[in-house]
Amino acid sequence: MRLQRPQLPNADAKDRFSADLVFKVKQILTTLIDQVNNLTEGQVTAVQNANTAPPTTGTYQHGDFIRNSAPVEAGTAGSRYVITGWICTAAGTPGTWLPCRSLTGN
Image (cartoon, rainbow, N blue to C red):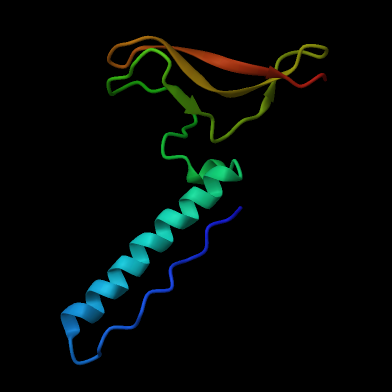
């Protein structure tokens, strides 16, 4: 089920503060709703922690997951795979990361 964009009342045009506030609230809610809708549909554009490689900076906890925003098929014939992301197997800065591979069957 997709969330609908906000339908907030229009502010009095004479009250500039209220008009600006309503505009900004609509803008923020629209962004959040679009991100939630994209997340529920599995779109990588909605994920804030997608990257093309495992992290090299920052502090991470055991079990943190970074999605691969640029997956490609790799490997040799008969054992090709796609790296769907990386999982942190030891907390730290940046932690220890291992690739999560999905076999393609090719």
